[in-house]
Length: 527
Image 1 (cartoon, rainbow, N blue to C red):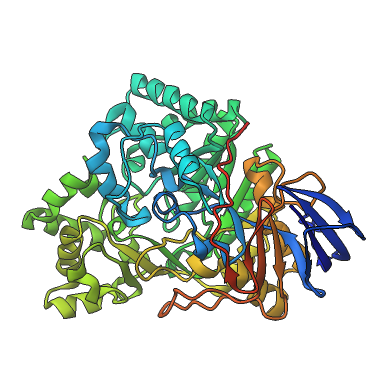
Image 2 (cartoon, helix red, strand yellow; image 1 turned 90 degrees about the vertical axis):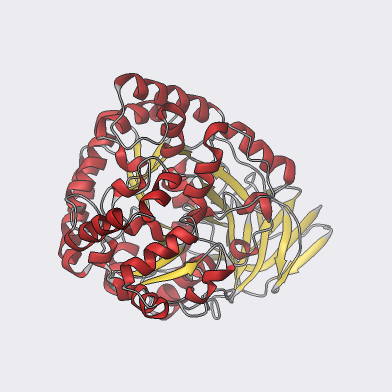
């Protein structure tokens, strides 16, 4: 099928000035760009609106959703045509059969839970094949999750790995990279990744570097010890040769805002040493993750089943409260840097606790007639750790300073169930509406570059992210006069405005606000 997109202002993703022109799509690819007069099957006259590449979400949590509801309008309606799964070191694959039950509980707070799918796929290759067989709405790429690899090699024990276990992790990493993964992800606040030592990651990253993959890292601290944390990440890059990509780059907590300039200096020093560094960012001053991360790391040792036993013990609860109030060196204590009044529940698994969605931990204590700690422990126990949260930690001026950095590209990092963070629905339109049109922090061309080509280059995604003849036809039509996110922290599940057309692999999946229920995406494997 031939589609002609006429009379648009083309922003090609290269940061070059926009220009007026037409674009011809034939089947899955862009056939021609310029002034085009040709017989076609369909003409879309965009009447002076922006035509640009589809956005690439480099930090997504659609891993399970894609098997349950693969259409994923939440992403498509904000212009995302490609996303990268397998984030934070804990995701769907690999998954040895003996750990299925425990692992489903471990990831439920991030990716959700479902009894509808067959969980016995075991490997990344089989997981990707499941998506291919079922069909997907977006293009999907995958990272090898460090925690999954660690679990396969040594279980969920809360300890450092032995030399032989690290060797086994390297073997598994190689197998998963050969299946088409784009790199290794880790989340050093999540279990079991948090138990790893630096050398473990260096050795695994040596394997990833052989494939020109990236280490995508939620670093060990984004708060009190962030400077030392960044030095650890840079050391991994230096000793392994791997490309470094920091997940959701930020600084958390009022007492730590003073470190931002030093963080940026570390980026500059690392680049001078030849380390390739990039990062993604969601354009909000609040974060979102699993509520279980507020517990000290030792509470999670052995997996979710062991955590449930500890949450049922009054003695263990008292020990958790002591650590949360007094801190543990090197541990990102969410209660300390955000506060009980700035941590809000966004999702639960069962109906019995739905009344707590949208409430902060102090409010939950009052509702349940208990102190906020024990009320929160009750919630996590009843929901088997499958609870999402939003935490408020930062400043708008820091968001802007990070947004302007050359290493930056845009992401959502949005959890997709319950009452999510508004970034799940609006990250990309928010940048265009708030920071391009309203505040003029970025030019249109620079913002589009950060959402497209910059993201593709950071991960080595070929033939996408730029409007170029021969590239895949992932294309957006955007009204720059109206584009904006609509979701708020109170009512986050609102689609944005101003993304008028979305084309994925040559298929028009969104047109003037109407979603065409088409599974137009493809699984992208690193080649």
